[in-house]
Amino acid sequence: MTAHPHRTVLRGGVVIDGTGSARRTADVEVTGGRVGAVGEVEARSGDTVVDCRGRFVMPGFIDAHAHADGLVFDPDVQLTLLRQGVTTVIGGQDGVSYAPGDGVWASRYFAAINGPHPTYAGGGVAELLASYDDATPLNVGYLVPAGTVRHEVMGMQTGRADAVQLAEMQRLVADGLDAGALGLSTGLDYVPGIFADAQELAALCAPVAAVGGLYVTHMRGGYETNTAAGVREVVSICTGGDAHGGVRGHVSHLHVDADDAERLLAESAASGADLSFDMYPYTRGCTLVSMAVLPPEYSALAVDEALGRLADPAERTRLRGEWFPRVADKPSLGPDWPAMIRVGHTPAADWAWAPGLTIAQIARERGTDVVDATLDLLVAGRLEVNAVMAVSDERPIENLARLFAHDAFTGGSDGIFVGAVPHPRAAGSFARLLGTYVGRSFDWEGAAVHLAARTAERFGLAGRGVIRPGAAADIAIVDPLAASDAATYDDPRALARGIHDVFVGGVRVLRDGMLTGALAGRGLRRSPIPTTSTKGTP
Image (tube, rainbow, N blue to C red):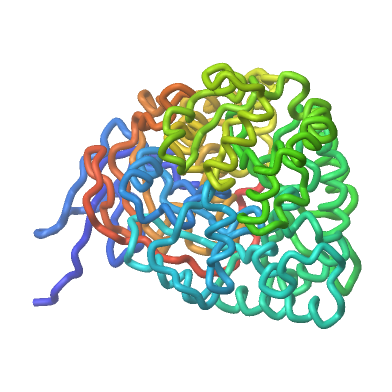
């Protein structure tokens, strides 16, 4: 008698397969980590049968921009993501993460964003990707972070790279791609990315273009009022000539008025750039407080040197008189900046009361002015302080919905899990895209395309993002009547509703809303997808 491998049969659900095809009621066979038959599947003795009647069987969602590089090992973070149907996160964002190198600089600089990695002790992208294999219930893809690469070669030099330095940086990028990285990321408001010009970045994209990878960027100069300049620089990098051009591009967290975004995306396409973008369904942001309120040169200093300067009364007087008036003039902040910066995280035990409060509230609590409150907060936290950033223009749902409907949109949370009072986007983005924007931006078939299939196609994750025979069995079982977000700015960790069963690599990692303890995730290596039929679907 022939022995059969263990199978799971997802019985009687409505399959939304990620190709843009119409939904249909069908069984889904899962065996050996892959999708088998989709249709009528007869159960065999020993099969696990999951009743999916009344629910949608959808490809697991892929978070195109996540800061879970180190925290994906944390069960609370795992539960937060899986409850939204997310089965894969893309790390290495904003040009800063652990590999290549020993990870020390990136761990310190992005401590309030990525958190620490519990096992990576150095090496390169191959070692980092291996750290995720069978160690977490989620899959992790990785972008070579250009800031980390520049720091490995040039430290915090602010000048242009010479030919030898540029060649070494290109080698590190190529090595990362050979190890399976999905592309290259830059963070052009962070150090040392802020020091790299478009010519350098185009050169670093040459090995990316050579393997069909993706150039992903947090654009220069902030967003909103400066988006046009940022997008045009991206276009110049992506179309920079035969030697360096031809790379596909992706704009991280594209937050700007829909009219402006649609115009810029159309201009980019007309210029020959192949761009996609991600967005989260909130208007407030989250970043390092030091980046928002200190002069850029502070980011290039060693932490102890920066703290020494901030403790110097003469330097405080200078900053109060010369720099903070410029903070008040920033388009993204304005004169009401102390009320717009709400602390999310500080490691300082004697400031544990501060998360959840604005700089203005902290100043009142301490009986100081807002400048001293800000600088004292940063010194106490050794610059490891993040904040939720309010905006002057809270764009309405209808404006956001237009961009989510765009063909180039892919789902991304920009989720930051560090902090006592984090931004709710980490716990709510994908659930909100389902609960609020299905019916406004896309139907359920379109949701599977934008949140799974198209992301897999753009990032080079062949065999993922769809439910069809042979595809990786990353699957979310979704209650369409209940799927919604619960996280708010006051309760940012509240778990999403409506998704209680999730499979990764064919293994059930979420059962009845709880982690099963199975560690089926992998570090995903690049495997480009040929052009598919998902483009242009609703």
